[in-house]
Length: 118
Length: 110
Image (cartoon, rainbow over the protein chains, first blue to last red):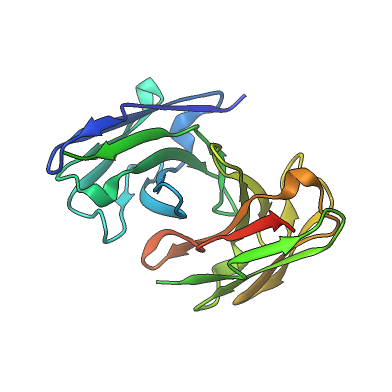
């Protein structure tokens, strides 16, 4: 059974940093592209970053230069380093696996809440 | 960058009725790689339809997807109480690479 479990969320001050982790199990982690998606309270889904199985990374303009996605295949783990955090980064952060073939997110974690506030 | 626009923003219907949700893309979606998700409060999104018209494993056959190019539709033939939720469409772009979501359609009980 595929499982994705996020951790590392919490309360951080504006300008601060936080590192999220996503532990994967039930599949060959090194074979799949992985992504982070966030959702502010009462808001829609926003893509945050992606990393290919070969390690290429990409980001939307809203987080580029502040967030860094990485992976450690030996530990079946995905990470999101978030720096220079702003109030508008407050959200639940989900990790998700990209399917092969149709480029959809077919498995999601339960999410971890990040709150940026003084 | 492709923008996905969903309509309506909110759809009020009764159980047993038919629901039709729309997702329009600003440019043609590559290979019709258009996905629909359902999300209930406090839960992660759940994939319903991928590749515009393929039902995901375990999804009831009252859910169907159609469309191509820039216009896509999610249809729920007869609404069950558990279908009232928020629905999102999503596409994957290669230039620039990334994922785009529509803003969502809230399906509420009338």
